[in-house]
Length: 206
Image (cartoon, rainbow, N blue to C red; front, side, top):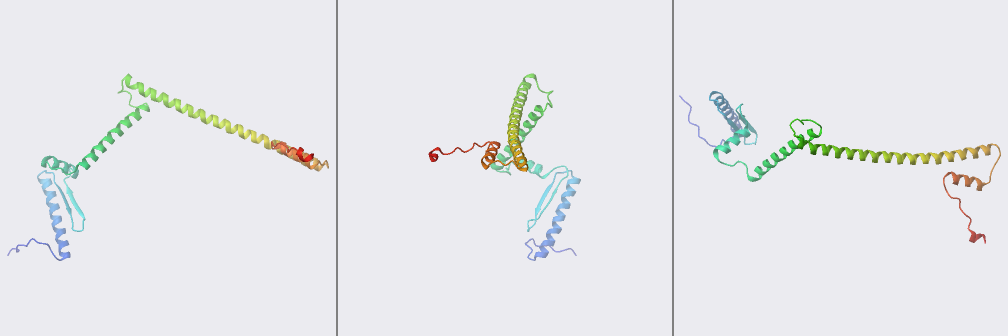
């Protein structure tokens, strides 16, 4: 006695529904693999469960994007809107620009020059010469800055050495009992630091 005919309608019980989905999905994937091998066909199957989980199969000799592209060509239906087509064209344009920049970069490095004619080598030579000029100018600016900083440091060192020398002389005189007045000592410190001594106010002196 054969099985009775199953009525095709939504299965209300969630557990039974999930079990049925898993069994039938596996059966569809199995049949797709068999047809792909037996008949040497290009097959792609995409299944989404009610929970949004994806299951897919694609023949080993192709990919899903290629299948969609072929479907679009043969059916005449556009799967992508104008926005996506423009985006795809922009991506291709950027790829071509990147490839051209990579080629120019290799040429600037002196690579892959055999395919260029003498006229094409002229702008490369000019670009290299301009680059060398800019690099040398930058190096000269850096050297000038180093010399300027070195000169400033040298002047500071001379001032400090002069100040320390006078400090040592003052300490030596103090050790031998040769004390000078406060005005003389202050004048020495001012001279060592490059400070002009204060002039007396002639208005007050009168």
